[in-house]
Image (cartoon, rainbow, N blue to C red; front, top):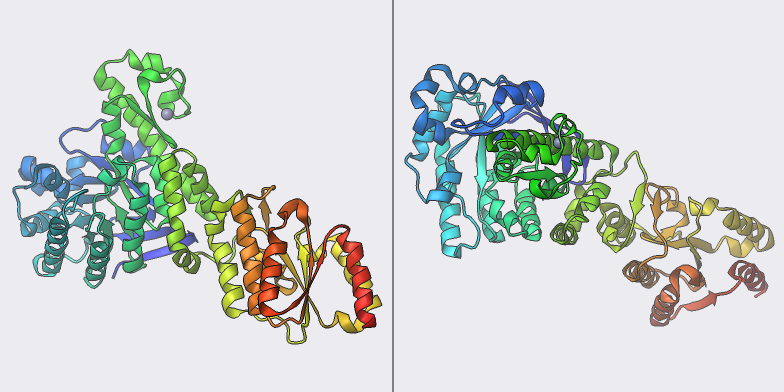
Length: 536
Ligand SMILES: [Zn+2]
């Protein structure tokens, strides 16, 4: 069984430690793709300069061109790389040329001869915009080959990757993931999402990854094949991907394209480098343009690789800080397609809620309605709906608006009112239940006010309409679930207009609950009202 220990989590993202026969790898991890026939940056440089723990290369290309050389000394010596080597098996070549000259069994045996550390079976990639019939064939054939691995392989020390195919057909991905999870693989991979990404269909990519993720064993790492742009790392990691490979750093460089963590720029259009990596600080864009094509490609490849590695580090730090959501939000601002993908997470909010850590060391930042998808908001909603009931003696619900101080019940105004009520109306006070209505969580009963993260967050005001309506809906649902005889709503029109009042009125009418709305000068009016209540 695979040895993969998760040390930190945020959303579905995780920092883990995977044991390979050549040592441990820390995830999330980027495997730079090494073309064994032409290297712009050598594997040795990757190890020494970039601290790369691992690279990926293509076993099929090695078999065709360097077979004799490699079988004598192994793939590590061939590449002159001391770290972990992963091999792909030629599936990408199938996608490009339709057919390749090897068999699934041959390529399994060959990878064992290479002494690779992580090996991949010869899967059949589905591709993008193919017929359902073809997609079915690729899934079934990949599963058939996966089942044969146990009979073909002779070594136990190599980790094997079981790719999940299906393309944009989510039911096929589900089937593939289910079948693969029953086979003794150590790692899974989601088949080539490159074309989906080239079409900027990041929302479809979210569906594909989530379908695979929800149907694969959580204890096995997931590799997202061919997703080598730093723009996408954070989102993919947040969806639970642990490994990436990048050929893009070199391919982009050959076309004079300069990667940034937010997108790609053309060298010819650049006047300044927005980067402090060793190659960028020593040159200006125009100096790089004056270089020969091969030198330019190398300079840009080195920069691109630095950007990729730095981005992985930023995401890891965000996981440790519990700020992965805030981080993917920032990424989403760089392109509408990424923002669309972020919004697609709504579809999976329950799954995220279940798998996100309960507490974090930092408070939460809320910007707008998109943050209503956050696991913490969903969790609070579920907690109130499924596991909460008001204190037994509570007959009167008093709804207070959120205050700027947190926790709300410790605000000066609120404490002062409580003190007076206790003194003035001791009997009725015992029958009162105090709750706050606050964005983005909705109803916060006073006894939960201090539990994380209900008082450890910041939200931008004024609120947008979606957020107001969401909170109003939560208030309405709470009232309708409750058994109060009387409700007092302290309005705060400066934040909420009439949204809360309207929702409250409607629900009280439906339930036949007596509602008292206190508008202007609500604090004073409330105390006056409470005193009268005591008399009756
Ligand atoms: Zn740079």
